[in-house]
Image 1: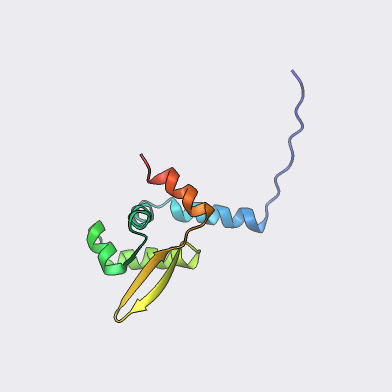
Image 2: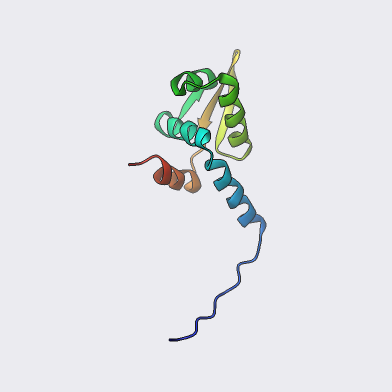
Length: 101
């Protein structure tokens, strides 16, 4: 058998970022929110909470965490905060991995 020389994979800021994003996506509540947003693209916190039968404060907390890491953009509409999915290659691959049958 031929000996294989493996390259070293050093810790880098990009690798740390990827790990953080995957960790965020690894929570069941956030997976439910993501699947909802993959289907609808944008919605207000109260509508997401009602659809997922979850408390508004819980949904708001998780949305804020994901927004802070680039998953969503947000906009205040009166007393409501609405979120919109930010599409990129990571999000598109995540959608294929967790929400498609």
